[in-house]
Length: 164
Length: 373
Ligand SMILES: Cc1cc2nc3c(=O)[nH]c(=O)nc-3n(C[C@H](O)[C@H](O)[C@H](O)COP(=O)(O)OP(=O)(O)OC[C@H]3O[C@@H](n4cnc5c(N)ncnc54)[C@H](O)[C@@H]3O)c2cc1C
Ligand code: SF4
Ligand code: SF4
Image (cartoon, rainbow over the protein chains, first blue to last red):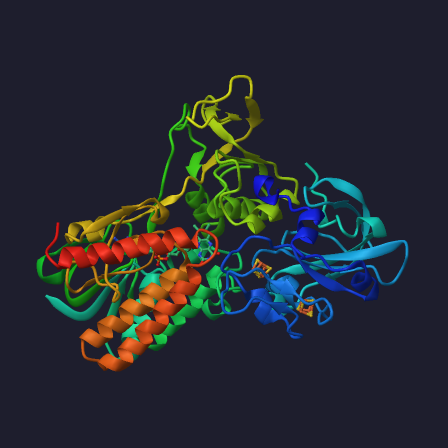
C-alpha cells in the first residue's frame, strides 16, 4: 500500500481507475496523476488547457483524468505541487516508449545522454536515453525530463537513478 | 505614547493578510515582525504550494511572501521589521524591542485600537539518548539554515518523522546536495502527504515506518544513529536495531502554536491534538476572549498557509468593520465567503479532525463569553 512506504504501484493506480489505457498510450503522450490521497489541492485542474482533469468544487477530491480529452501537453506536470504527474507515450515504436517527469535537482544532464533509469522505489531497472530536457519560465524552475526506455518499463520508470 | 489603529504581531501569511484587508478598507496598520523580513514560514518554503489555485497553490512559498509584502507596501502598511514584541499590557499597549544594530536596541510602546496576534508556531522536540549532541536539530531550523541562510548543516541526514515538514525538508536538503540516509516514522504509515513521500522514494530514500530513534551516537557530534522497530507502548523490539551513519539527526516531530502573546493578554485556551495543542479560542470574527485582540494562523491552531491567509483575511475584515470602515452587511458577506473557503480547505486528509477542533474553539468562546467557566 502506498501509504506504508510511499511507493505507489501500478496496480493501485489501476484499481483506483487512475491509469491510462494501453490503447490511449499507443495513440500519443498522455498524463497520469499518481495522486491517490484526498488532499486539498487543485493546481493540476486549473493548469489544463484541454479541461482533461476534473477535481471540482471540493478541492480534496482526487484528480480525474479524461484520457480522451488529454492532448499530452505537459502543463499539469509542472503545475502539480506534489510532482506526481507524468506523461507516458507508447505511440511511436513497439520497442521503446517515453516517460516525462518533473525534475528539480541540480544536474548536468544533456539531450542524448544514456542514464540509469529508476522506478518508483528508486531502484535502477533499466537504461534510458534523455530525449528532451525542458525548462520554461512558466514552469518556474521545474524541469521536465523525457526519458526513452524499453516499452515494458514505461509503466515503471519515474526518475533518473540516484547514485549513492 | 504612539497610537495606531491596528497593530499586527507577526508578519507571516496570517498577519500580512489581516493587514492587507484592514488597510484596504482604510485602516492605518502597523505590522511588527522580529525577523529582518516579513513572510513568516514562507520565506524558506521553496516548494510549490498545495491548496486551492485561489490561494496561489502551485506558486512557490517564497514567491507568495513577495506578493503579500508588495500588497502591504502598495497599501502603505508600515512593516516594522527586526522588531520583537515583548508583551501586551493593559489597554492594548504593546512593547516593542527594535534591533537597530547588533548592540543598539530601541524600546518603543504603541497603543493600538485593535491587535492581531499572528505569531505562528514553534517546533516540538523529542528526547532520546544523545539528543543533546551537536547535529541533532529541529527540521524547521535546518530548513531555515539551508534555504534562508544558505548554510547546509550536514552531509548525511536522518529524519525523524514523516509529517509533511519532515518530508519536504528531506527533499530540499537533497536539492541542496545532502544525502538522506532515511526517514523514521513510529506510525505504521506515512504521516504527511503521500505525494511528498513518493518524490523521495523514487530517489531511493528509505522510509522506515513503524520505527523510532533509539539513540544518537558520537564523540563531539552526531556520527551514528540507532533506529529500531517500535511497539505500541513505545518500547523497541530487541534485535530490530539498524545502525546508520549520519551527521545530522533532524527532528520533525511537529509544531505547536506559539501562544505567549495570547497567554499574556489573558485569552482563554482550548486543547486539541489536531491543532497542535493549546491554542486561544475565538469567535467567527477571529476575535479572542479578550475584546479587541484577534488571533489568526498557526498561533490559533496548526494548519497551513492557505488557512492562515483566510483566517487573517477574516480578522482584517472584522477589524475594519468594528472600526467603522466597512458596513455591517458587506462585512458579513465577505466574512461568510471566507468561512466557506476555510471549509473547503478543511476537507479531505485530516480535515475532519481540524473542523471538529475549530468547532470546539468557537463553542468554548461562546461558553466563556456567556459567563461559563
Ligand atoms: C516545511 C514546511 C512546509 C509547508 N508547506 C506548506 C504548503 O505546501 N502549503 C501550505 O498551505 N502551508 C505549508 N506550510 C505551513 C505554513 O508555512 C504555515 O502554516 C504558515 O506559514 C502559518 O502562517 P502564520 O502567519 O500563522 O505563521 P508564520 O508563518 O509562522 O509567521 C509568524 C511570524 O510571526 C513572527 N513572530 C513570532 N513571535 C513574534 C513576536 N513576539 N514579535 C514579532 N514577531 C513575532 C515570526 O517571526 C514569523 O515571521 C508549511 C510549513 C513548513 C514548516
Ligand atoms: S498533459 Fe496537458 S492536456 Fe493532458 S491533462 Fe495535462 S495539462 Fe491537460
Ligand atoms: S496538483 Fe498534483 S498533488 Fe495536487 S491534486 Fe493535482 S495531482 Fe494531486
